[in-house]
Length: 69
Image (cartoon, rainbow, N blue to C red; front, side):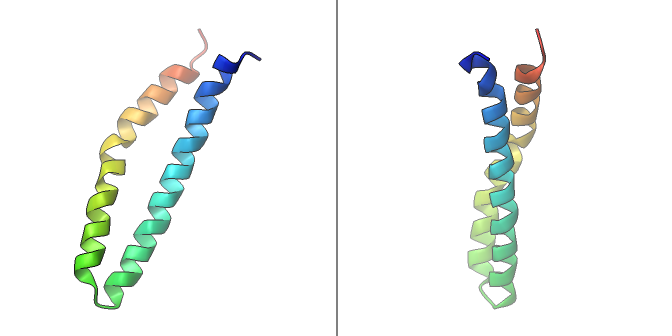
């Protein structure tokens, strides 16, 4: 298998890791908020919004890359 065939799979796995980290960080922000640090939790959620904004583009691009020619 040529190295170029590995790139879509690698990107897919990196994206999976990114989404898992997003979920874990969101859980932590909820925990922080429950303990009274609403401002910190809001800041974390604001930073996580970038992942949400880019998610659809990443999914579509990966689908194109993974489609056999």
